[in-house]
Length: 299
Image (cartoon, rainbow, N blue to C red):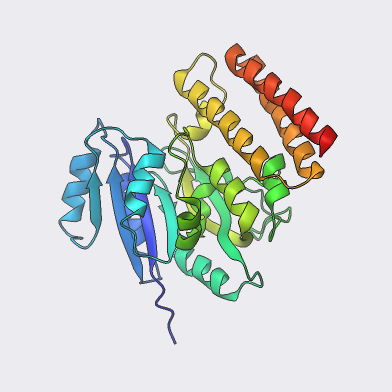
């Protein structure tokens, strides 16, 4: 009997006119037929909006949210999430590409995983250049394209805190009920993935799919390129968001080991703030470190 579980793909677009049609078609061309597609244009200043509207003429069933101001990723996603009817959610950037069996592989893992409290599944990613040429794999692979180092599964909270279990967010599928329980993305943050992984892994299990699910495009405006740009306003907002995320995570910790793990993570961020000459953020981290050492002392 065919599984008819509905999956909602939320595709966020901001100045992706060159890539958005390929991204949308990668959803339409999935070998899993029970999908809902919601497209959000976040007040692009290129021709993305017109490109999407022209494409939608042939796909009237696709929902389109045309933001009248730039809201950012977290608010735009949550706006679409409130309309989502699927039991599972994919957050797709409009410059990335789902491989044809991405959704079916994720659904099969949800249905057949040994983890009973499974909230998130994710896989490997092929990184491509702006022109679509192969660059590398997110997790290094062998000749059979299998991940060389085993990924942690199940309860990965401690690993996420330490930074050892990085997850390429575009390769993930998350239960809608998880988003509902966590009230979606935190709209006060400049980026969403670390925060959602920490909060989700505190309460839910994760499973890994050892195959390439997505092609992720690396371009100059990609979020990942803005963590280490000195004297850049977007970089400062992103790194301040990391501070807020770690501050929130402290309240989720349940034992001394978890407090020690987040302290080590803070050391990395302190060095980064110093290298970025963000001395206001550096001072915040140093004060937070002192408080954290007292927590460890009396835990």
